Image (cartoon, rainbow, N blue to C red):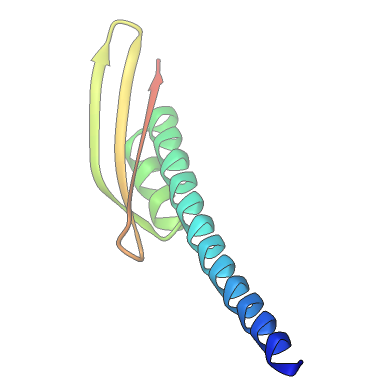
Amino acid sequence: MILPLLAVVALTATTMVGLVNVNAHDVEFRRGQLVADAVVLAGIVDGPEAANETARRNGASLSSVEWIDEDHGRRLTIVVTTRDGRTFRSDAVGG
């Protein structure tokens, strides 16, 4: 009687640990993409220095910055690298 109960408890604990790890990974990924989006918006509105400052304040660094002049405005594409070494890309178009 006690053995099946222990098996259920062990299975539940293992599943919960796995879910917590997946959730933590998802949160870090979303945070990295939010930082990239904030950096590109700062850059398109206030220029490269604002992009660099926004990245720095959010614990990331600019790995790549590309400005392209288009008919409907300028396109900015950035790549940021977070403290844990992950890279995130974001684009914006502005006047």
